[in-house]
Amino acid sequence: MSSGRHAGGLEGSAGFDPGYRSVVLSLAKLLFTAALLGGVSALPAQAQTAISVEPVPAKTLTSPPALIVTLVIDQFSANLFNQYRSRFSGGMRTLIDEGLVYANGYQAQGITKTCPGHSTVLSGAFPTHTGIPSNEWIDPVSGKEVYCLAAPQNTLADGGEGENGRVGPDNLRVTLLPDWLKAQSPTSRVYSVSGKDRGAINLAGHTPDGAFWIQEGFGLTTYVEPGQTAQERLAPVSEFNAAYRARYEAEPLPQWTYQHEECRALRGTLTVADALVRADLPPDHYNLE
Image (cartoon, rainbow, N blue to C red; front, side, top):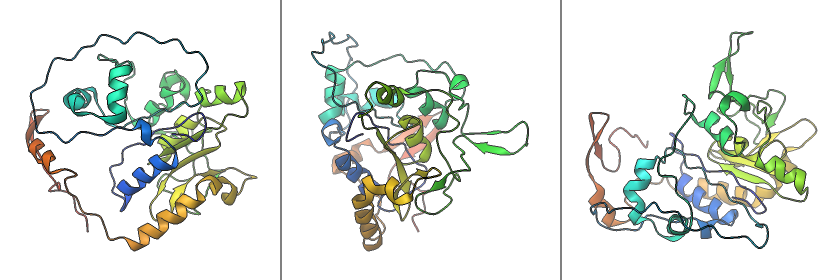
């Protein structure tokens, strides 16, 4: 997700931000990745068909790629991918048909939380080396809980303290692909956007042109290091933020609904970890008020 060479991923969120769905769609346009993003085609439920796992023959690149896009989808497990694989269209269909799918991936670390997971994606290092072993941990000296991306010397561009306090890439002990790009080609531009700070910062490296995440009611925010100003840090997304705030203030709270009537065919009772879960909208436990 980048207007230059690299992008971070949109991370899922347990909370619900009014207008969040439209924000994500706008972000896709803002970062010129709409052509790469596919959807789920509206088809009735159908039996799973056999899936070929034969790799597509590798293509020889005649020139280096001008754009690298990295998408990280939180909670998009292999079983969900396989369940809906035959329904994907657009960019997702292209990735399936022309890309490489690892059908039997393996997590070598025991804690599969978001912050350590994101730190491994573009570093190629295990969490024990990235410096991000969990979303938070207890400092052995102070005995206090530490957030994975805590950076108390920084401020936030929106002027608040944020859900996780002041943050930055300081705890990352390794370099990432964006850092290697900058070292090889200083004119490369690196941007990442996520629903949360840990999704954006862990994919952007140490010196990105922008690492943004959603702050409810404000738009895209970022960290501001000493010597920087919020205005300059937010310059790449100033127009988006203005449009976001106007929409946030004008539109009523969105309501849960089915995007396509055909999706009602997927309603039913599922068995998850020996428990019965009703697949329906809106979720009974979700209070929108």
